[in-house]
Amino acid sequence: MTRQMVDYASGPAIGYRTRARLSRALAYTAGLMIAALVLVPILYVALGGFRTTGQLAADPAGLPDPWVTSNYTEIATSSAFWGQVGTSTLIAVLTTAIVVALGALAAFPLARFEFRGRETLYLLFTLGLLFPISVAILPIYLMLRDLYLLDTALGVALPQAAFGIPVTIVILRPFMRAIPGELEDAAAIDGCSKFGFFLRILLPLSRPALMTVSILAFVGSWNGFLLPLLVLSDPSSWTLPLGVANYSTQYSEDTARILAFTGLSMLPALAFFLLAERRIVGGLSGAVKG
Image (tube, rainbow, N blue to C red; front, top):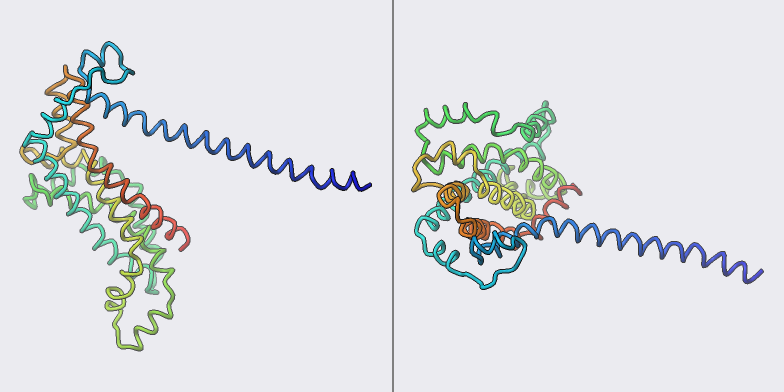
């Protein structure tokens, strides 16, 4: 009787441990496969820049032998490359500043004010997530031409910010709603206005979400291609994605050099994203809780 009780008690526990190990093994396998899908193309581009086109043609999956650094050094000492880095940085900073400022101002009343049509207005903002920029490319071009913003950094940053504001509001609104109303009441008793509460209390407490939307806006602008292609016609003011496309055309026979240019082009955004990855996860998890 005692033996039966012991077996009965240990059986489900052994089964649970087996299922737990199997689940962990499946999770690790899936994680490794996803990591490989992401990392292998990046490593191929980075290592391909250290090879010659002849090496790539002879053994596409091999390692550099010998390692060729001239592809990277020639591009890194090119003034055109750094000019494109500067343009991309300027447009990304402008876009991020506009997205964060306008997105926070729009999310504040949607989160903290009670008024008729608030949810409808919020729904309109969320519908903006479904509106692709390619559909509006002709009206945008005509508007920028009428405003004399063609061939300017602001002409790229403004439309990019307009398409980045919906996701900013979707992330910021739950964060601002989750902040207790007692804080707002206490601030009002101390003589703080609504806008003062927004500036002095709400924005500092929403810092994780603000960091998240800032990073998303910066990386999205850095990788933008269609708008810069439409707005920037002067090669001296091109961004890095346009520079990569032009470089690929100019050196279409030299694959190794193209891989080196592509690797250097994605390095700043990749480093920025890796440094800020924890803040993105923190901001998004806070938005989900809210």
